[in-house]
Length: 288
Image (tube, rainbow, N blue to C red; front, side, top):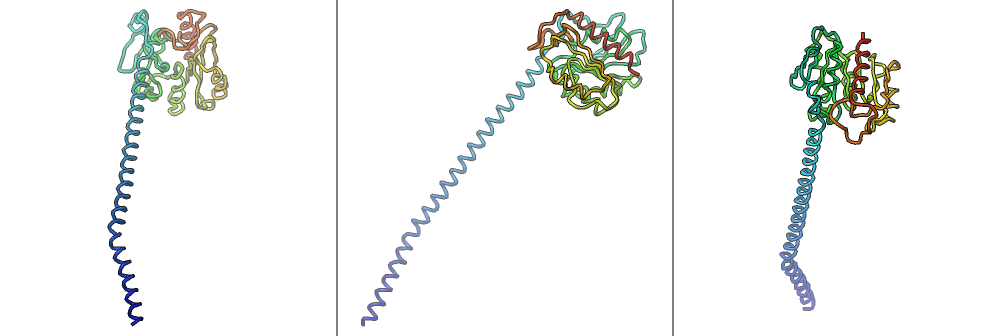
């Protein structure tokens, strides 16, 4: 009888444990589900927060890009009192074809020409006087308007000019950023005979490419990086022609007013452009 009682107690204990586990199981299951739901809610919240942050960041980026392009587009343009240089006269015919303004000498069949890239935020019309003066010496000149007034966006625009005028030996040049981009174009295309740098310098080595180079800048230019200008001599051909115009600044190579941050010139705009034009004409004359 004692043995039976012991077994009965063991069975009763086991049964009690089993029943307890069965009773607790739904509670454990509910806790597990609640935990999963909380984790899922947290993931959703984090995902929404990341998405919101991404949308905010994207919106700021879009506004920055739009603002940047507006800033580029609303730059420098030809002053009203210099508009006459965009009109044909007895010496030069001026024609505008899309982004290209042609200055063609009259009564002369030009065999050499200059393609001019403008500086950053500068409309190509600002160089009308300089281009017109060069054209009077018998050279075809084309000033190129760039997308959003930024030469990097129109690096290959010279190609169309060269292809449309196969009978002309072309020199490519540019003012400030335009000169740097002109160098990049010449390096990749090899279809020009020389490079004119106005307040500019190359970012790549063109010393061994066989180009003739003219480099012009002003002593009162507060925009150009003189350290970069000096260091860039190692990237230019040894026979590069260097011209520093005493008293000239950055702005007066064109006719758009004063470039932001520039120094005050000690010579007039007319004198600066005249000196620049004559040096470019001499450079073109010696291109073979």
